Length: 240
Picture 1 (tube, helix red, strand yellow):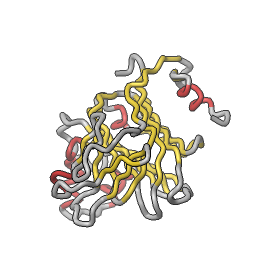
Picture 2 (cartoon, helix red, strand yellow; picture 1 turned 90 degrees about the vertical axis):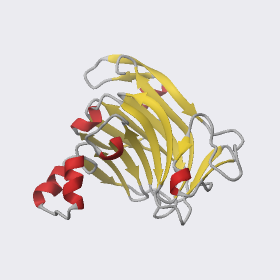
Picture 3 (spheres, helix red, strand yellow; picture 1 turned 90 degrees about the horizontal axis):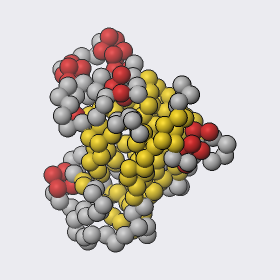
């Protein structure tokens, strides 16, 4: 872990909070994707995962289990990024995964709440990674907030609207070698998100939407292509 205290505590399945309190953590979900593909013609990843290919890509296959890893390849005719989803009810949590993306590709890890009515499609928050940038966004109070989204769709470009959205987001430059394995780890801790890449701290951002008490599903968003492995979710005891 290269002497990173936070990552070491996660590896030991406990979290040391910035306030000094220690809480045990439960590994609530893990997937190494080391199993046969369920279908040659449709998405059938197994282990509780679903996709949006049925209504976004005419049911054609976009997700493959291959060589002990998961490959996502968006078809040209698909009218939306591939969404690779799992229903896991979470509050505070930590996510880790290994991934490969090509030049110009993007990985998004989205949290949604199907009962959230103030944000488009229940979007709560997201962490996104490209070869050049890592970013986080409180979507329920920013870009996906129904009132703000309505103003944007109406063509409003006022400084006030831009500032309302900008304060819910943060980004940091990064340089990731394309088509190479990297490790993403991030923590939702109340209204704070902390992001690490390859054991190195990248950014921290505070926004009220991160503390939304229920994230009912995780959706891996892939606009182009992605290879993913060793996906893990920890949930803090007492923080459900």
